[in-house]
Amino acid sequence: MAYDTICIVIPAFHPNEQLPAFCAQLRAGGFSHIVLIDDGNPPSYAGIFEEAERQGCAVLHHEGNRGKGAALKTAFAYIRGALPACVGVVTADADGQHLAADIALCADELLANPGALVLGSRDFTAPQVPSRSRAGNGAASSAFWLFCGRRVIDTQTGLRGVPAALLPRLLKTHGSRFDYETNMLIDCAAARVPFRCPSISTVYVGDNPSHFRTLSDTFYVFMCFVRHLLPSMAAFVLDFLLFWLFYVLLQHVPLGLFIAAAAARIVSAPVWHLLRRERDWARTLSLSLGGMLVSAVVMYLLHQWVGLSPLLVKPFIDVLIFFVVVHFP
Image (cartoon, rainbow, N blue to C red):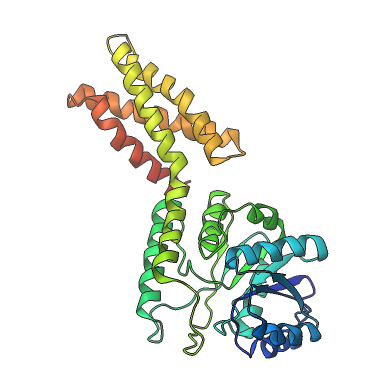
């Protein structure tokens, strides 16, 4: 099968000598567009990239090591300018963990689902999976489900099918190293992009260790979730403080609780919208209005029936509403 409208992207830092042979295997499998990113490799690796160029691969160079995220962005920008006919991109790693058959599988999935982000997913119950990889992916997958509402088996996979229509958005996605891939998932989930997660082979190459730095890169990955939550946290705090102020002033006024909740949300909702860089004002309005009404009614009922102060229960109600919205958008 010919994949004339699919471009393969392989960021490479300290690649092994099998990379040109792997590219030749991909070209024999029908992939005519292959882009390698030399991410600041020492001169001793020049022969690998020269051989790949002789085979017809495009090689883009970074003067210094800028990280996997920066390498992917360099390739995405190149593809938008030089290969406008491509309908999608399949990213793969240069460490031998991704097989040509699995790359073709993800390309087929992307062509069959042109609006979806394809995530080639490994089996982390396999015995050859290192314990640190199993634990790290499990924690990241759980955090992604909790804060983004999506079940993803393999959040760390480098084998991904990306529709060309998403490239402009992903060029603006934060991150330059391994954190970029997590931010890509978060941004796509926020944009309600569908995910497809075909199973791929679980391969670990012992003599070509990962460039993932366990402590520092794990920290950056989890900071992605903190950054994702910051706009909601800031709006949450602002909303509560304004509600507290208005409620103290209006608690003895008929419907004072509802007026205070509405006044606070009128200010906090646009702040959330701007911080999140949302484009859909209608969605912001519906979420804010719906959440405010549910929160105010529950506060009113708990105050009338149980005698609980609205100032005490509002934070818990709003946090619960947040998770309901995340998991049932």
